[in-house]
Length: 575
Image (cartoon, rainbow, N blue to C red; front, side, top):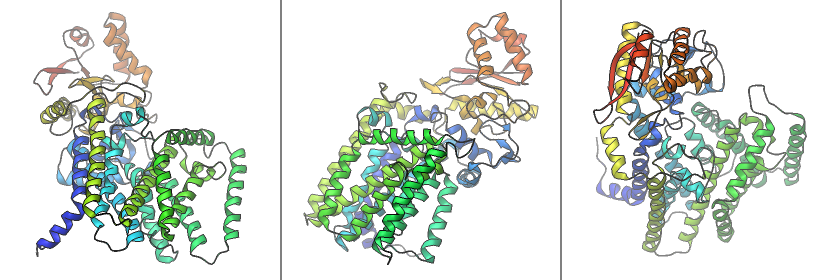
């Protein structure tokens, strides 16, 4: 194998050293955010991690809710098109890396690299449109500093009026989700290969189809993104590159708006399982109000002014593309189509998030290309880029210190401080990016499951590890994929299971009542619950308080689970 020469390595480092440092910095801060991970990323990890961990070991995995272990039968829905977790499970099983480390470090790194490469590639394309070949190419990498902004704590960004968009917390701690790829990079991946020259032929169509298949395989939230990208690109092509009369394009636009408006007045639901079109449209308007109050409009105005000063036809085409996406995304009548393809309110929210990330990348790219076009000394541009990057890193770092101590808070609430030293200390004791008490509990549950053949375990909704909330019913399932967790059915609801399908929040409340009261009445009702759902094991935080009543119910202490300091944390009872 021939090694690259020194000149090639030097050129690579010159063009990408800032890019590499930003990716490493973002990943470092993300990996230290243990309060979010112990909370299971607001419990969503229960779905994604359990899917990845369960596919290789569970028999007939497509007949079960892998987040709970409950039977579902053969179900075909939008998730049936997603293969992201199935694909990841192959690498997980092959490499043998613990699930927390595999997803929260390595898969997260992949997500950040993809997003960073998309932003860089957009900036590179715009740079070539404006400046052609130039020795200033290394300036393009500073566009990736947007990652420092987008991955900052979402509560901090919202409370300070910087940015508040759907599921932006996932850009901080959940870049390993399949949906994170279309949510952050969907518009980039779909449109970047074609914006340098607008044309439609068989090759273009095949490329778009293949890219769309890949995006949908990651998450079906890509469907409205694909629609917006394709319809806007076709219209730009018709206006600028085809022989089509401009009047026909205008007629089509107005016709699409009128038809969409009429349909929106007469159609309330696309299907009974989906959110109403009105609620989806209202959600869209709410996010528009949020965006208007953020820094995005200010950045857009500057970029638009700079774009017109460049007097570059390709830049104007790009702005026209963005404008048309905005029309079909936000303008009443026109947005009927994207709302219909969204099906759920959170999908339209994530589509808007993808658009915000896309337009921010374009605005940053245009700004960099404009500065380069002024022929300012390269060293001055580099210093300016480093200052902006340092400021955004400071913002990200400050948001980490002030708000990452509590992952349960919502916008408008005060944050809890978290120091780097404390975070490093916790991660050093839990190197698999999973509470070690959860790993120890899972090991004992797996052992007990092998002894019994079938194991259903009841847990509380919330525990605590390292001073923060710890969702055992969500996290442990990814480490014990053959154990049934009825408590998780209160979050990932399945009704088809003949035994556990009726286990609801009300049933879980019976367990919680026993924990609070621990008297003969609550114990008797709790015993009926244990028998009704054939519960084999229960995880408790106290032994002395509950031991007598648990023994009365036929349960005995099976194992004491130690925390990362070697202290008793949980008590596993079995019968």
